[in-house]
Length: 160
Ligand SMILES: Cc1cc2nc3c(=O)[nH]c(=O)nc-3n(C[C@H](O)[C@H](O)[C@H](O)COP(=O)(O)OP(=O)(O)OC[C@H]3O[C@@H](n4cnc5c(N)ncnc54)[C@H](O)[C@@H]3O)c2cc1C
Image 1 (tube, protein in one colour):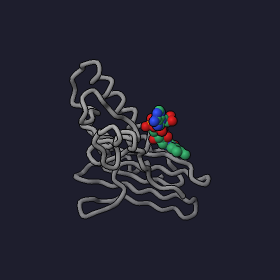
Image 2: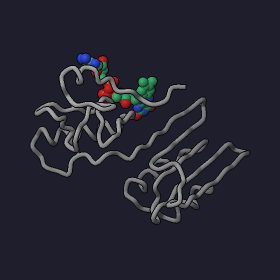
Image 3: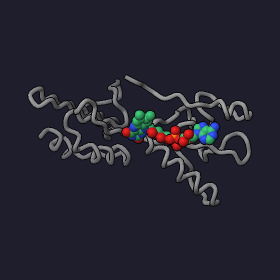
Image 4: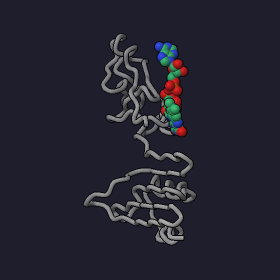
């Protein structure tokens, strides 16, 4: 089993670019050194070094706009989602995955078919999900998580 990522910051460090776990960047993917930028797994934005490709594409889009002089709100961080097949079993997770005092939870467990589903609701909105064994509704849930919405119909679909 391999867990987590460790950015190689040696080159940046030797060049005098501020680093922490990754190369430190602001919302415009700028390092502290003028005209030096960082995107991808080596970059650390608001304390997070992302280890999946989707956030890195979003960072690339923001940096492209920055280099073209197009003003926008910059990179605000990414909601993470991942869809994997682990030892032949479909697994999906996105957003918040652990319950706390601010969340309500929808859970279903079908031992017979090997299916587990958990959806976290926070402030009336879907905030995260874990699907195991049946991940076909993952994209639909991810849309809700990104848009900050909910729909009671989704729970009927998940229960099927
Ligand atoms: C086994 C594995 C499975 C993965 N599966 C998934 C998945 O299913 N889904 C997903 O979203 N993500 C997955 N990832 C993560 C994903 O691959 C990375 O997040 C992504 O590739 C990072 O992109 P990057 O451009 O930041 O860095 P990289 O893709 O690592 O590119 C960095 C490049 O810089 C080059 N380089 C390094 N140092 C120097 C130097 N000094 N000079 C010049 N060039 C240099 C490297 O050779 C490399 O080509 C997986 C990663 C691994 C290792």
